[in-house]
Length: 396
Image 1 (cartoon, one colour):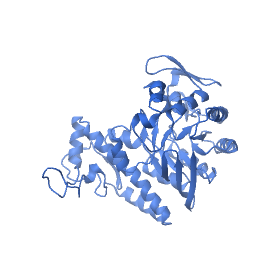
Image 2 (cartoon, helix red, strand yellow):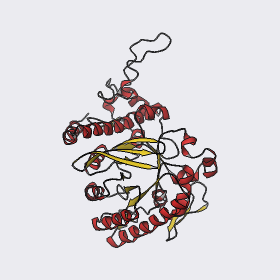
Image 3 (cartoon, one colour):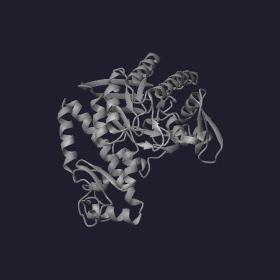
Image 4 (cartoon, one colour):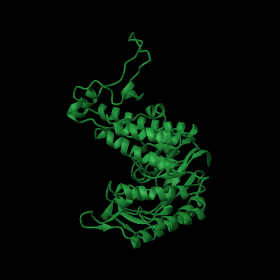
């Protein structure tokens, strides 16, 4: 089941509401990535507390481990990871593409060696739909070929040509039809999204878009961006494609990106985003804040008493202020962790460091999308965008 309501627009920016089998999602929304059935370093309760409405699972990796027999015994991914809100699963296409020399793409599908144990495996549109049906994800993605920006190694290869991008796009288009047919055969009660491809060529994007719209998917994604192309190339495709998708259906920009990318995406008509950036960067000591990015490993933070972001209300920054402690503690709570403390944890390799950094980064992304929704509700998205860029440029 999928129902999408377009509640308000400002320019091409959209405020919507997406109803799925496991709940309602207010859009625009950022979706934390849970590759192996968990968002790294974050308790599910923390995800609820910070306002996560929908998370991702990874079809390829969950197929490898723990496998479909285990997943089926739990009734799907929701029961396995104890998450009662919506889940989106990718098709596995990006992971298969990233295997490089370990895989061979044919019309039928992709032959590859398992990165876990070396077994010879085969992924096709039909297999991807069967796996995702077992996972019981609320949003299922068609199997596509992720068109790379570079063919071969960056040093010795070449930028994907128009002819190469067309071959890839047309293969994804045929796989979309097969994905749709298998999804229907399986009587999957959830929603299947088509994925627009076409590389960095607007006319190919338009061809892909028109073919997918004719297939009448419940929702659409823009894929094949943030795959090594320069930022201006990505922005060109973002400016071209999302707003041309059907207005009455949800639009998803896959694998993007920085806070600035999210705001730019909303301005170009995108409803849904996902990216590993907030969690991966947290583990590497990069903190996203309202006032720019903070490099936690810099020596200047060694004795800094400030929180990561003084304006932030996440557990890492604000602690339990206002919550009474048990067993005779102070009734005013405490005010969160200092930059000095997180710098120390990072330098010592303590696991609490990336956990707190991840909580903050995800809270920042989710809160940013909440502020975007509030701005759209108030008809003030343009003013919000100007303030966002000014604050981010101020620096921490």
